Amino acid sequence: MNIHEYQAKQLLKEYGLPVSDGKIVLRAEEAKAAAGELGGPIWVVKAQIHAGGRGKGKFKEESAGEKGGVRVTKSVAEAAEEAQKMLGRTLVTHQTGPAGKVVNRVYIEDGSDIARELYLALLVDRVTSRIAFVVSTEGGMDIEEVAAKTPEKILSFSVDPASGISGFHGRRVAFALGLEGKQVKQCVDLVNRLYRLFLEKDAEMVEINPLIVTTDGDLKCLDAKLGFDSNALYRQSAVLALRDETEEDPKELAASKFDLNYIALDGEIGCMVNGAGLAMATMDIIKLYGSEPANFLDVGGGATKEKVTEAFKIITSDPNVKGILVNIFGGIMRCDVIAEGVIAAVKAVGLQVPLVVRLEGTNVELGKKILNESGLAVIAADNLADAADKIVKAVKGA
Image (cartoon, rainbow, N blue to C red; front, side, top):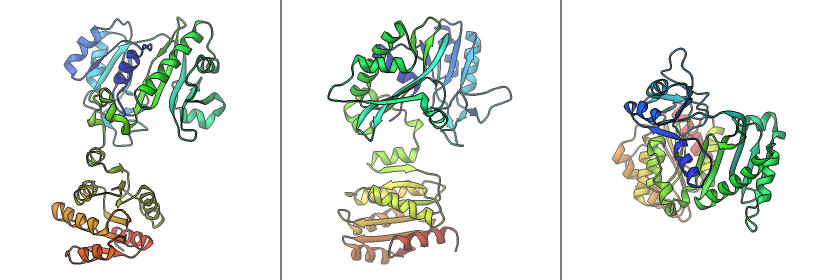
């Protein structure tokens, strides 16, 4: 689960980390009062969406001379004006895709005198199963770009959970960033606090980009992006309260309420599969046969008729879906349950696109019998290759 920048900074502030003062604006008429509560003389106006690259982004409705979702202003009136321009408009960045995201919140914060911009992040290293630090002197830029062009400017190391965080780790970060004097002590303290936040809040990622050195020689977290482990939200009620469902794909949101593993993609063939590995293989073979999957959807091993029905509804709610492939290997999952769920879903929402079903495993003959006697226009497949071939041909009109 992700949260907005202003929410991330509230958490950082709770842990005693240095951030700028700011005010959140939800309605245009609130902008001037919010800006007036800040000291200035520089006000930074930031669009709040769950995507990076806001500064380089562009509003769909943007007119000549307007650029980006992060703007520096020099008066209360100008800050309020820029905030009003952003609210309700669609911001497109390299992370949102061409559809963009609607800006429902704007954050106005005090400007900072910047001497240097640095990069600092904590994330879960899947190789070592440890919390890892990623640091670079190239702050303010896309870290992927730095990694591709100048990888020598990135330092990464993990923390042994047996010994935990220590002053050594903070000093290692400080030296990698070229900090000196009081900044080293500040960095050690900052690293310790970020690590504690990461652990206590069940975070998956904490990214400070940029971490700046001010002209006074102090460290400050100028921007922050935090992501949390969705599997741990049951014990993080305060974090869960920060969830903004308007930032999530409606289909993915609906899937999460029924414990379905769903990720929307850009293709044309909807997939309903049991098991993550089989789902990945299904997506791969769809591509192999010349089309693109519209989603990843794993209904799990213990899916019920009701869960399968909801999964089908979610797939058909995607206007890009031109065909559906149901691929079930019944181990724990029974093929007759899948068949009943598919029939119930088709009766509930209708069937406007080709449907190919491949069943194998527990109660497969019963499942096939249920489908054959349903009267539905279902295309049966004998194996995965046959299923992929038939759905791709059906979608392309062959």
